Amino acid sequence: MCLGEGHADCDSLPTLLTRVAAFVGREPPILLEPIRFRRNRLLKQGELSRLLELARKKLRPPGVILIVLDTDEDCPAILGPTILGSASEACSDVPLAVVLAKRMFESWILAGAEGLVEQGEINPTEVPADPEVEVRNPKQWLSERMNRAGGYGEMADLKRLTACFSIMEACRRARSFDKLCREVARLLTTAT
Image (cartoon, rainbow, N blue to C red):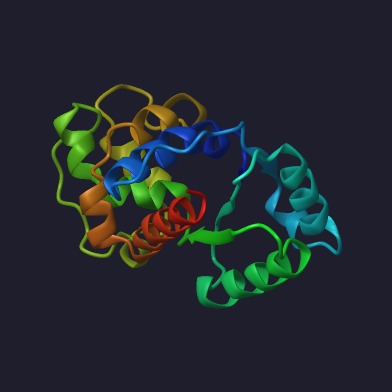
């Protein structure tokens, strides 16, 4: 079971997790529809427990829970352990992980932009060595390079771009994406 932030992220998570499972050499998980949440509500008293209880009710054994959210301007090294601690307390009987995209989900797409160039989604470009640090607004970066008029639109484009960015390059360039891959491998090993 996956918990994600926002409509576009939740629509894209099944595609992402299926691709990551294949990349880490695991069977693709049976994915239920992700539970969507608003980040500002997640940190309110009791909201994370409520979401985890909802996830637990939907799980089919052996189930796992993955929480994915953007850090925006927050420090992942502080926010991640805080959410993981609360989640582990609220849901100690189910293997779970918390992965925070440094800045936003689109940072991962940007980190694997070679795949987007190969598929004709964006114009050929130099990809920053450390996009999580060097690119403050990944959505704008993508929009400026889209191979069509109108630029990047999260609802229109995120799921499609998720299906074709280079996972290997994203692991190399984005530490938070590498963490996602490691956590997915761990959870899928736990669930077998």
